[in-house]
Image (tube, rainbow, N blue to C red):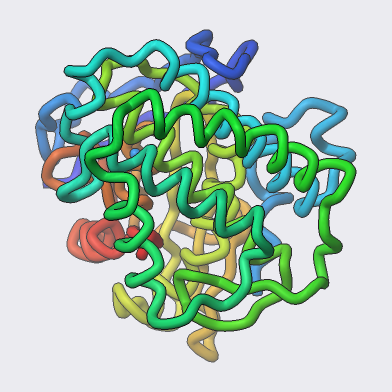
Length: 323
């Protein structure tokens, strides 16, 4: 059964967002008195999309290029992981995360190995990408917590210098681990920012230290999902010409936009009021991010749907952009 949503206003952007920031506030939305939820969740992550997202950046951030924002996001998540890591107990170190089969310690092992790879130039690895990832985790798995964290502490100033004064040009050669292919360095860096933020959130959920859901890394993640959504809607969810799928996210990074499929079957991100919605999904930013990072499934998240429910469900089921 579809529900009727009376949208009174979009939520506010978050307040301050320090490295370990937990200051987030937002307004909600009203449900029509006759509406019913589709699901009740258990509590538990060629498109010019950025201009269509709500203006949640500061003036300083707005003046930065996408490449500089990705670099800032990497620095922010690295600092957060270092700070959290220094406060972990032995029990927390071995706690399971939402990243399949990985503990908190495994996440830190992965971060250290990939950041070392980036520090060494981030060139194409010998062998398939999964081998690079698995070997990095295996190398550090079982090492004392202090040893892994010391390695991260040692890498931090090196990476911060590489991400500021020594930042490579956006069009410099890069390597995209996910796709195992050569790309401009800007693509590699954005993917790295996404990965770091997702793993920061893995750790935070595992040790019950929520925060940074509206950080620079979260904003990079938002933009990458927006860029991927047209293909998801058409290729994976099977939406045809004339279909308009609207998304509203509430909370730390509010959004309200539509993915529209034109008469030629090409999809693009447009303002939410540009076309009448075929389907409309409203969910929290955190739920949206969990689905987009493959850390949760549709049945575990609370989503309000209107219109073509089956289409909306197909899109949500295919939202994951992580490898």
